[in-house]
Every structure is written in structure tokens, then in C-alpha cells.
Image (cartoon, rainbow, N blue to C red; front, side, top):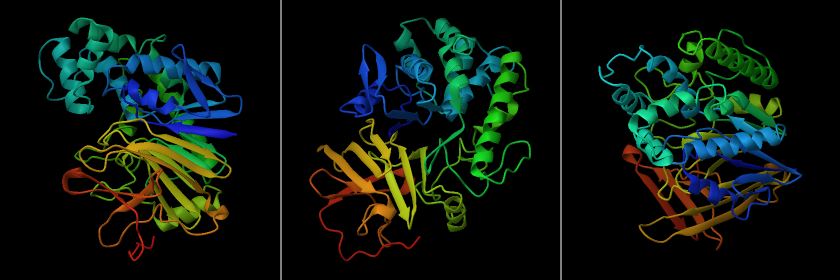
Length: 390
């Protein structure tokens, strides 16, 4: 079986088109996804907000999950879950600091000021071709039992494990590993994912029972950054697999070893930007794939494929100001490699991470500089560099 993974399309239909192009696992036909008989699809969350096709994408994913419930896996991202807040906040319980005006003003402020979605209101206007008041109605309709966002959330998970791979929207950290909101601490990854899903289901049921109530507040808090910060390392939804400057990093060695002990050799996440192409980091038999390219120069939809042999990545990158280059490489599982690869290694002196190979055999290097300024470089020679020891 071959697994196709993509994440963080955030309302951008062009990312869907990029993902399905020459995809061996699935295709787009008459506006619907068609999955191959031996294919598995995992979508990593954040379907909406930053593009004018949010509802269209939700419908695409939900219909696919309804047709193949065991082979189309949806994860709930923070941008998907946080809209639950609107049922309460747009009905007389706004957050502190909200404008004392119309529903339209309140929704614009809420999206921009507390959901990182300053363009979402305008994108919905474009998508539906409707009035501002109708935009407000549409966000509330999304949360009704037949709404596309609600149907997405009903079918989604907080985590998924396949073969030796763990999929999470945000990440795995010391703070959240084998910890379930409410105090439970399962001993195994399987028990942890089961506990997280039980928590998620109970919270959705509480919302459905009383959308304007507060009984689902624990889920709203779980998917959000901690007050005064940009992350929530206690949450698998909002944790960031980065160092403080925003560059991707492997989990602590002790956590890697525990995951390996439990059979997890690879963690795949969204939510952590990595430039135009997914970032791969490796140490020994452990691998991290950070595949959110929503803040790349090109904002394209990369392709990640996994099978028993390893990982294949396809993307497009723009190292300089104009030239666009294709990324295409296959990296065998560490146990199947005959020789070490530069991919997944970080230069000690420059901080650049070798995220993959170009179709012409050159290497792609990436890092975020000061202020999350994206830096990408292509080189034909990596000999003589000093590499970090993870």
C-alpha cells in the first residue's frame, strides 16, 4: 500500500491541483477525489482560512472520507477547530477587546485578531459572492449538523498511526507525549491516540449539545497557543517542532528513543513551515517530516508519498527571485540505505538544513533567518561541510 500525504492547504485550491498532478495514489475527476485501490490518503489539517476555496476544499475532503472511511484520514488542525468559538462569540459572548459593533465587525475582528485569519472574511465573500452579513451567516452554517466544517470535524482525528509512522498536525513533544487533557497518561502510543480521540469526541459532543455553551472549552484551549506565546507544546495540534528561531528540529533524543522503542520510526507533521519543500530531518533510524509549506515563496502544494521502502517528495522551489526549480527525490528508510545521505542534516556553521534533492541532482538547503525570513539555496557540492550531531 502507498500513502499520499498533504497538509495546510488553508483554502488554496491551487495546492489541491498541485497535489493531485501525476499523483500515483489519487486523482481529481469532475471535482471529486478518486483513490486508487491500494492507496491511502492522509490530510494533515488546516483546510481553510487563507484562500478563497475553503468550503470547496472541505466538501472535497469530506466526500472522499465518506466514500473511503478507512483509507481517507483527516486530521483536525487549529484553523479547523478554532471556528467552534464562533457559535458562542457571535451570539453575545465576544472575547475581551472585541469591537462593540455589528456581527460583521465582530467576525472580521475575531478572525484577524485571534485566529490568524485576517483575509478569511474577504476570501469567503469571494467564494460565495455574497454580502458581508451573509458571510457571517455562512460561518455559523458551517457549524450546523449538515455544515461542511462540522462534517469535517466529525470525521477528523487528533492523531493517526500507520505502519511505523505517526501523523500529527502540530507535533510530539516532551510536554504532550502520552498525555491526554484531563489528566490521563497512557503508557503506549496506541493508548495515547485512543485517549486523545476520546477527549476530542467528548468535546465535539458537548459542542453539539450546546454550541453557545462552554462545555467544549477544553478543546478550544487545546488547539490554541498558550496566552502570550506563539505555541502550545502541551498540544499535538498547536505544538511546533522548531527551535525558537522557527527552524524545524527533531524531538529530544530521549523522546526519539521512546518512540523508536514503541515502533515509531517516523513523525509527519504540518503546522511547522519549512519553505517551498517539506523538510526532512534524520538521526539514526528516526525521521521527522515537516510538510507545511504554507509560508514558502511559491505557496504550492507539495507531494509526500510513503510506503514500506521509504519516502518520496515532489515540490517546486524558488531559491532566488525568479527561477522556479523542481524537487524530486526518494529517500529509503534508514534500515534499507546502503550509504548515508546528506538529506536531513544541518550545517553546523550556517544553520542550513538539507531538505532534499532537485531533479538535476543538486541539493536544496533551507533555513529561516531573523524574523522568519526564508532563505533557500541550491548547491551541487556538500563535501567538506560540518554537520550537527543530533
